[in-house]
Length: 482
Image (cartoon, rainbow, N blue to C red; front, top):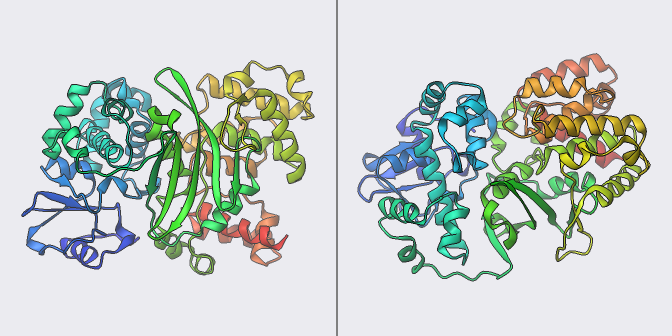
C-alpha cells in the first residue's frame, strides 16, 4: 500500500474510496463531528472540513464520533510490519488480548521489558494517543459492534468489551457517542441466533480464499479444525481472567458485499475480542496485497490475493510441525489425531467430526515420554514435544504474535531434532512473522525452476521483508504440482 505524505493524498484516497487505505487512516468532518473510514459511502466532504488521523483513538480524542454508515470498528487492521515501532505493535497485541482489563500500563511495560515512561512515549509518538486512551477507544468500538450485531444483554456487552464496571461503561459510552448504550440499541434491528454470535470481517482485496483454505486444510488438526464445503470451522480454547473458555467457530467468504462471515459459539462471549483477533491472524486479513505485489514483483503478480495463514494456537502449530517432520501427510494426520484424542479435551459441537480441543501445554508438560510414544510417536519426537510444552508452560518460550522474533527463533533452533524449515514455519504461522522462509533450498530451486540452490537462495534476499508471502506462493505451486 502506498505511503501517504500530505493532506492532498489523503483526500484523494477519500474521494476515490480506495480500499487499499482502509484502516490505515481515518478522516474527521469538522462540520458534523463524525469520523469515517476512507471507504465511507457518504457524500465526500470538502477538503477544508477534513481532519486526518492515523487511528480511531486519535479521532475520538479530538472529539469526533464514529460514523454509523462505514462503522470504523470494522476496519481490516494493519500488519505487524506496518507499526512504526515493534514495541508499539507488541503493546497493541497485548492490549487486543485484554492485558489491560485487569492491570495497568506499568505492568504492560514490565511485560514488554521496558519502563512505563518509555512505553508511553513510544506509543504516543507512533499513534498520537496514550495507551489508556487507545484501549478505551478499542473497548468502546467493540461494545458498539456488539450492541449493533448481537442481542447480548448490555451487562454482558460491558464485560465482553473489557469494562469492569457497568456504570463506567455507560458514562464513557454516552460521553463519546452522545447516546447511552440502551438508547443506541433502540435504533438497531438485530436478528441473532440464541446459540451463536455473527460478525463480518473486512479485508483489503484481492483475497484468494480458495488457496488459503486449501493451505489450511492440508495442515488441519484432525478432530480440532477442518475445512468443509468452503467453510473453515474449529474448536477454540482461550485462557482469559483465570479460566479457560471453550467453544466453536466457523468462517466463510461472502461475496456481496465481500466480507468474511464469522459465527462464534455463545460460550465464547467473554473472549470475543481475542477470538476475532486470532481469526484475523489466521486468515491474514490485515494484509495489504498491493504492498506484497510491489515487493515480490512477477512472483506475486501471477497469484494476487494469496495470504500467509497465521495460527489460533502457536503451541498447536509447533507440535504438529514436529510430528510432521519427515513424515507423509497421511502418517502425520493419523498420529496427530491419536495425540488429540488422547491428550485433548472432548467438547461437543454441531459438527460430528470436531470433537476435541487441542491439548494445553500444561497437560503435555506433565506427560511422560512413554505415554506419548505409546501413540506411535518416535521417542525423540516425544522428548522434543515435552521440552517444548515445558518451555511454553513456564513462559520461557512465547509462541504468540507479539513474541520477540529473534529470541524465539534462537530458542526453537536450540530444541533437539527441529530442522530449520520447521523453525521458519513455526515462526511464520505462530508469530505471524512476514519474513520467515520455511522452504529448504532444494524445494526452493524446484519451485523456481532453476538448478542452482545457491542462486535460488540468493534470490530470496530480494524478497525481504516479505519472504513468508514468497514462500506461500512457492509452496502453493509445489502443492499444485504434486
